[in-house]
Length: 168
Image 1 (cartoon, rainbow, N blue to C red):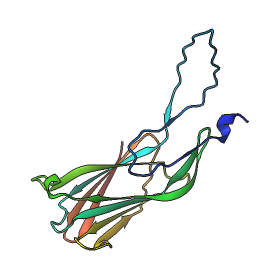
Image 2: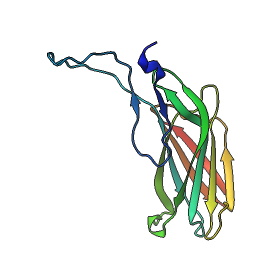
Image 3: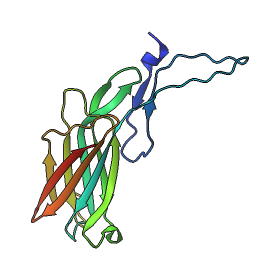
Image 4: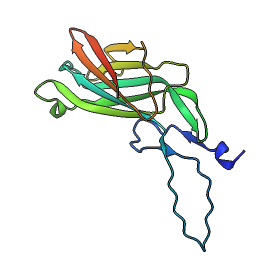
């Protein structure tokens, strides 16, 4: 086994905005010779973009959780273990546009673990509350795929959320 077989990437968390790529390409470095190589890189994670519409005026924050996404990736192989990637976004009144649409929120995660589905959980928070006053889960056929965009549009309508999911 090569040294690359022992290298492991660990999911850096939702707040990290860096892109992670991997490639396995054997080469040597020599002081006497300059060589150029072309190496194909593979993006190690997928991107989930959330768009929210018509959120209640009393909502001061929203929490999003994507469950069943990879925790680690072997550089030469598959993703292992799984976690819930979650993030809480504060809603600042100035970010609410006249149309009621809130800015897009982006979260990078490792892909859904093989032969599994991801679950998306959304919660709305009011001032002074640590627990969401409204929470909903979708788990139908969600899968975060490496190097792809999963677009989740959420519209609040009379006490419930309506979800539209698109894969790019």
